[in-house]
Length: 196
Image (cartoon, rainbow, N blue to C red):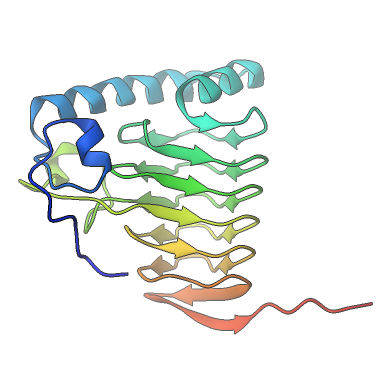
């Protein structure tokens, strides 16, 4: 992964921002979209009934009814998340969805994890916004397991069946069927299937 961003002109809308164009987070269209997302998160996090939580998830995010996300969830825009069937996100997740963030089927994410598509930023609070920034999409394959307190940075792709160890900072692509951990995360070994 590199920190290279789109060479197009500044974005004036959330749709243009999603393509990776640079934008000014303090500008009105982005602030309004974040305000709506914050209110959605507050409402979602207060619910305890599973059916109500599922209804809110499927209405707002691009996911199936089999996705489970625990409180307290923080999503910056709640517009660019695509979550596959049977995926589970544990408590205190932060998702900075400046650009698309795609999770495959049966992804397991431990507590206190951050997934950020904003280049160089992992916080959703206004005091962390730079004057201008851009994003790069994040793609996480099927059956990936991400350990607690890990951070997945902008532009990263994680292949199917990969395992990310707890406390890792993932700044570069991780191939399929690999175990990676560390700061920054590096591949420690490949996962091989034993035949019986």
